[in-house]
Length: 116
Image 1: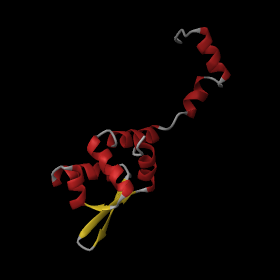
Image 2: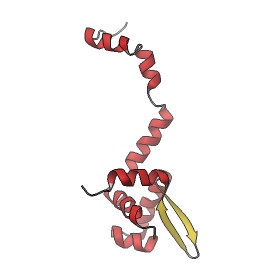
Image 3: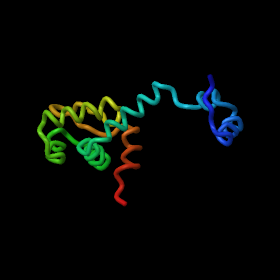
Image 4: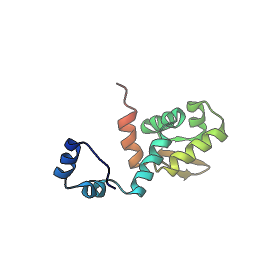
């Protein structure tokens, strides 16, 4: 049995080509999961601070630990979440891993980290 919906809503849906067309225009489940993962990664103040710092300066773990003021183990956890969300990348340079933003990370930096 079809749900009873207000007439004005039904007309809006019809103007947009029907409910099926609206549903087909939504992002795929995979795309939504990817976006949810990014937003979850950026929902933590430590990770957001790391993202904002890396938008200004690439860095090694030792400096990031001081910036975030957390233990190395917690920092490693937060970095792995940012990496798994494709917001940062780490490149080996000698004995160091240098972290920087990915192009996607830079887009979020520009949106979230600029002072108002």
